Amino acid sequence: MSKPRSNIYLPLEDLFRLERIDDQIFRSKAFPFTPIPTGRAYGGHVYAQAAWAAAQTVKSGFVIHNVSGFFILPGIIDIPFVYHVKTVRDGGSYCTRSVSVVQAEGKGIAFTATVSFKRAESTPVEVWNGRDLYRHYATALQGRRPEDFPELPGMDTPWYREVLKKEGRVDQFPGLSCREVDMRAWNEGKPPLERRQLYFYAPIGDVPPVSESPNFHAIAHLYASDRNSLYLIPNILEKGDDYTLMASLSINVVFNGTMKDTDVGRNEPGRDRWFCQEAEVTWIGGGRGLHQSRMWSPEGNLVATSWQEGLVRFGKGEEYRKVEGKTSRL
Image (cartoon, rainbow, N blue to C red; front, side, top):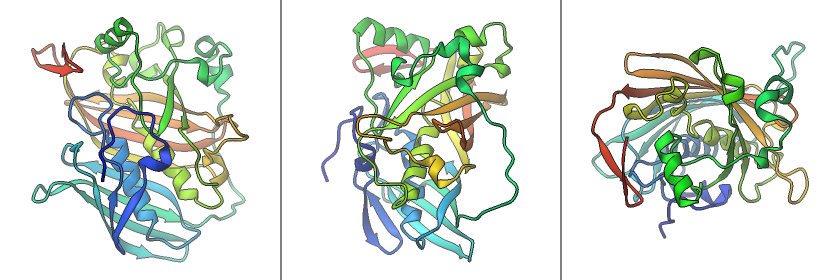
């Protein structure tokens, strides 16, 4: 197995390829990666791929609708993830899998998830609040297309943005093209918990049709849900450089839309379908914070809702790490 370099534009399908060890054990063919070379693996990779491994064990017609994951140990970037899937229940309409993820032998479980699947069903009742993003956030979006916005940095902190600006480069990110909207005009004058952040995302490379592999389209949104999420906690407080430790504790995504809403495939060759994550922070305290988001389809339909609990410890500190040869304070 060849180890890919971190921070490359790897197609989404290549990032999530699995090697089947037996009926319920799978190994990632792509190595974990870190958005910047600090040594910690990106959590969205193991979270989404755990659901993808679970999806290999269910009957046709069962599609992911709820994934709860808990981060136990930091991911190691030079050892592939191994997924142990356990069947909890197979029902007529719903089925459930638990997934335990390991890396180094003897180190124990690094990540665990519960993945629930369901069959599609029609209902006479469907109620949800729509969102015309371009109208609601007109002062920030100003009618621009998603591709007009800059790519997200690997670390969404003021000092790191200055590093990228001085060096005239961007961080490549595998699997997804992710664009960040400058929300300062919309957030101005609002208290921290009323501020919002918008991200647009679309897959890199071709993906299988949603009719053939609906669960692959679902995991694209799981993967996107963790992109720079916890950085929003210090950023809405205008303390983007003033934390000493940050790590994901748990993440939960519930799919609200139909299979068609999750479709990340291109409408036509060369034209991406850009989805939007509308993110906020709903609580901060006790060394933790809660990030919440709604994920919208290009048609304005609600695809999924996410909740992520993170460890965030504030303080100036004198903790330093090297980032691509440069020493910077975290």
